[in-house]
Length: 355
Image (tube, rainbow, N blue to C red):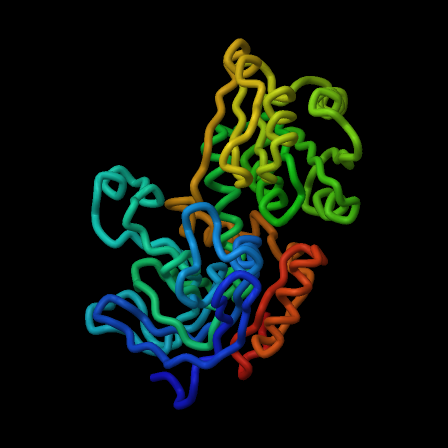
């Protein structure tokens, strides 16, 4: 059972209005578990909701708790839950279909229009002391996988899903546009899946250095390059045009670069979300049979990510550069907004100082 007391949470009320406030401790339903949260990463989407009050059609109309990159400990189970028990350490998959529809039946449940998703209006997230979640989307962590690694499965899943959609395989030459957390997990996954060379671009020299640390073979610091000039630099470094480009910024010029840079017959996967309408060299892509694919979050990734972390085939620990207690969440959000570090982790359990 949850300890008596209140449930400190990070809540966005509207654009520019972020607060720490206490909320009731929730009671789990028959197929849910109550979790004492441990580690929750701050995502760019959390900052965007705070700064702008919306992302596309998802608008903050009522206050919501932020946070969706998370892990915690089971402290109470619903009557129908049999695979988890109090004391289990779990990673949380934030997207839960509300009904079994055609997308669920084909294994692409992330595309279900009825999906519940943590910290996406109107659904609350898990940046709080106590949180309840569908037990089927809580995955037990092996003893050698830390809470922080468990929380990082969420961004890692974006990389797994993107590289799957891209078709990365043995010997692939890959261009990753953007060296933020999502760009970095794509570097990690592409190398693990057999990419022989990965080149990364970014504006930030420090983030490019981090890309080198996690396995990038080449980096390019973007300055005043045109898309065509940058595409030429990518080709020069790789010795050929890459078969696969993973675009993680959503910036129009970067998407243009991605198309120009990719080898004829290759694939561009768009991960970053930017403006709804952009201008791209579509005839260039069509004439060269460059496939353009999108991804929406991820699906079927938590089990494989846990296996990779447990076997030490992949190391996400270098992504965490800052840690804050939940009580200093507003300071943590300001730090993220300034673009400092890579992944900022909030520690929600004051009784547990483990990573």
